[in-house]
Length: 121
View 1 (tube, rainbow, N blue to C red):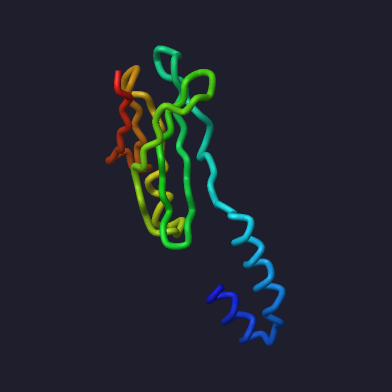
View 2: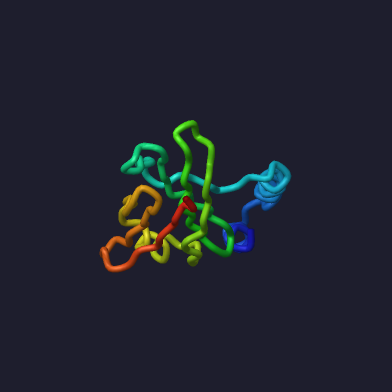
């Protein structure tokens, strides 16, 4: 809202509609969350993994989620917390690969770094 207020003032816009929408967003508990790319199956076909992104005001939190075939989540692990700017966090989103039946890796765009999530078995 700080940025919107400055823009509204500099353009001589009525700030009230922006404040009303911001209040509605807050009251509804809106969460800016999405799944990055499509999920991938484990080599043993018992699980699938996906990357969940939570875009907050002060951070972009990136999680690896592992689910059973029926959709039951068995692991949700935060692997990255970055600035909420696409130039900062997009470099981490390169590829998602299973490295074993119970371990999945999020590999950065350059292929030089990875974050692992492992199921207890």
